[in-house]
Each structure stands twice: as C-alpha cells, then as structure tokens.
Length: 141
Image (cartoon, rainbow, N blue to C red; front, side, top):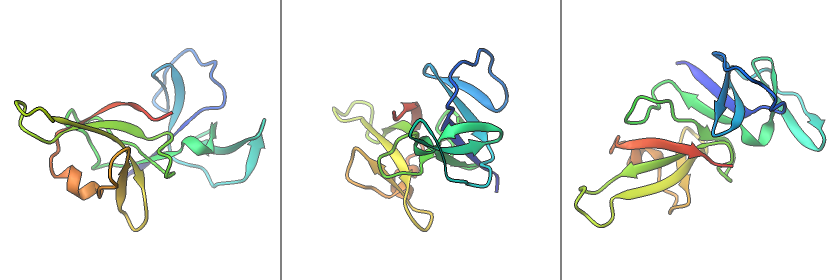
C-alpha cells in the first residue's frame, strides 16, 4: 500500500509546482516520502523532511492510497490531535432536502489505524467513510 506524507515547507518562496511541491491555499507543501525523522529545530520550529524539503513537523499529515474523497482527491489526515495540517472535509450525510445536510471536520490519525474527526463528537473514520460523499474543502491551519 502506498503511503504519502504532506507537511508545510519552511521555505515559502517557491514559484513553480512540481510533483512533490504544491501550493495549497497560498501555502507551499511537500508531498511524498518522509525521510528518517531527526529532531532538528529552525527558529523554534521542529522540523521533518518530506522528500528533500525541510518542513514544519506540526503540520504532518498522512494519506493511504485508498483514502479518496468523492471527487477522487487524496484525503490527508493530521498526525496530531489538533488536526493541524490535515484536510478539512465536508460530508453529505442526509438527503439534500433535509435542513442538516453537511458535517465539516478534520480527521486525525489516532491509534491502531483508527481515524477520528475533530470539530465533532469523535466519530470513527469508518462510520463516516461509509457515506463516501465527502470532499476536501481546505487544510486545517
């Protein structure tokens, strides 16, 4: 199973997107393999490396290849309980004519392969994934 990591790059002066480097909502993110973790700091920010890019460790998120939204975009879930760095998702869970049609939240990786959603009662990912009518609407800052 293919696993990708994503994190906000320390350097934000890039001008061109590549396969690994993406501009999302005005911020630059590296997407790819996480390098062997080392504890380094830059101006008080704990660092990690995605591919060759130094990144903010607190914004790390993960995607397993089968985690896709309803438009086949990869869903990245935060690796922290704060949800920082993870995708903000919108689920359509009721019929469209219902007054309550959307649930927004940011999933984060818990333990043992279980995902929970912040901003809501901590619902297990598999309960929400059954609906498969979710879409990525942003990144939790």
